[in-house]
Image (cartoon, rainbow over all chains, first blue to last red; front, top):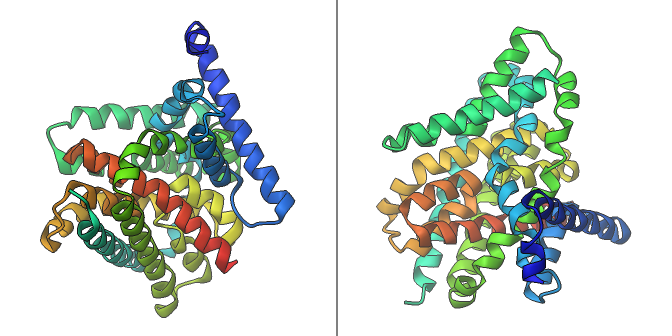
Length: 123
Length: 223
């Protein structure tokens, strides 16, 4: 099977991987709709893919080129969304408070994670 | 069509500039390609008085790749399963505790400060990677643009302030530093963690994936 996907033209390997990734997003979406659970389909799809890779239902080399490509430009994919921040320029001074909240969350969160993990690390 | 092109070019420009700044760590972190593209495109939209709706429709093609990209986060987690199996106690418990603490502050502090309901909803998901924060906006009722932007800014702030803060706290083990960065500062924090070393970067990747799950569960349980 490895040799078969390796023989595919690179663009087709990306298309194959993309098909699998979109398929898992759709699967997660459909499952959540069926169960009426309020979870984003893509996050559920990520868990399902992780399980499928572990059980070797899906092989890493099927999706590797597409996954690495997408994660390499992850920062581009939400630019259309972040540009929407121009609608919030009117919030003015409240931005200062938003940043303050985030700094507090970052310090406490990272502090807790760092200290807990530091105690539990096995050498 | 032109806005689609401008978005791609602005992001590419950001990556090129970032690569040129290899020797200037602070500037390199600040000059994040997402941030640069957001600011450049935002300024152009304001100058040309183009409505955001027009822009969203022109760039739908880019946004269509968000869902498969979130699914693709499973790939680094799968690759790092060996590390996760050896150090699951430190990584899972440390990461989950850190993300939960971050979400708690980002949820409760805005309430205490009496921030607008929209800001309260958008801040809750700041410890999750932007694409996940964006997908969660449907559930929290936050404005997607605000949730995504605050998540990006949170990652950026984290990458800037956390390494020195962790050193001051005495957190020195690469795994502990990595999981701490990933747990609250997701993608941009992970890029920063990779600069400290491979192990720190790997732990941060795990922290980022785990944070996506933890924040999703918190939002779902509250809903």
